[in-house]
Length: 554
Image 1 (cartoon, rainbow, N blue to C red):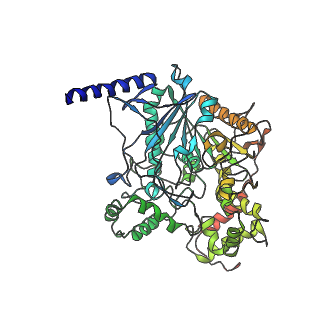
Image 2 (cartoon, rainbow, N blue to C red):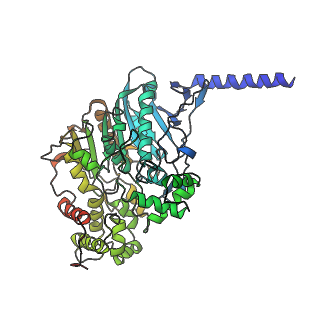
């Protein structure tokens, strides 16, 4: 009798599952049949694994393709865990090491027809240190156009980017995760009616730099068609890690692992709790969350699994990158990351009073030279250029913000777009529209308007949990124009905003579209001193030329 009741119960479960799935949209990917979460006008397939859990022997190793298959219909209605991280948001540990999943958002109209549509593959920001795919909502994109949106998690911080600068811990694991996810898209996106020949990779901040780096990696060849980099490019000074081996040794020492033999060091580190490996990040950030990307991309030795084998500037100068269109965006006041967090009297006074000590960390050149006098010389030279004899305070904050903007974003953006244009179509827009609430308001914990922040445009395209107020009609209109720009670029490789084409940059003349509102925009010439480039080129020369003594300003 017990067996009969058990059999009936089993039949009931099977019937309910089949009835449920019969009412839902079933998609057949390489692993098996799946259903997602149904929304008002789209389907969300959440937490789809694209690689095996990067734990145990796969920690500090390239991702391994997820090959598990199933015969039943499986539900994917919850986001996977964000990757293990020591986050600037809350200054605490979040996430899980088992995190290599992606999400696919498909408009209902797309799944109900046979026509293939363009795909946006979005890489989140967070300085290669924190963030996750679940923070960027799809609703605006799903309402606006017939595009599929894919968002991805990738390894971060020590687990994603630590390196011994040899074959033992090669580094760039987070970038290789992105490559593996792009391969998944090529194999599976047609099942969602996506066009694998029209994949546009889009990224914000570190994600924007990631997009640019994929143009240079042999591993990424054939996996995408175009790229859009918001507020980040491969030449930004925080992208390429300096002193990687030294940092790896420091991590090992803190965790009581040997450093004289890298293989033994790796074996020891693989036995440590993920949280211990992640929290150690604090030891590399002496002031708040600065420098904000102590673990980032590295140049690897040549091998079949190497993501990047030379400096990005070398790839660009030698024209050894993908000959495909690239669209770069910058906001007016990029330096509000990290600057907005400093916007209170306490932090500004500390920075002012301890400038010689803190500037190399805040402006991220502490590892660029070992000469202490040179660091002080550079710090004082930068301060004098932007602030003259004035103290750093709320009254002079705009000048300090501009310093951060130029150092971290603008100077390199100009060079990157100009050099890219020598080999491939390059487009640039400059965003000057101030939204009601963005990253600056969150980091400063203030509603005061201190500028058009890093990612101001991105948060009008993707709903983000940093924003706690609804969009105004004006903001929605701006967001729609940006999404229309996505669609034109993804579908036809045309850079269009509103009713105008963004003029293509030429090597001899950098052009950009200046966007002040959804109705106020125009193409303009960009001068060579965008981001005070002449000054920062001089600073680079000081930091990277042979050692000499600096006493003139000490």
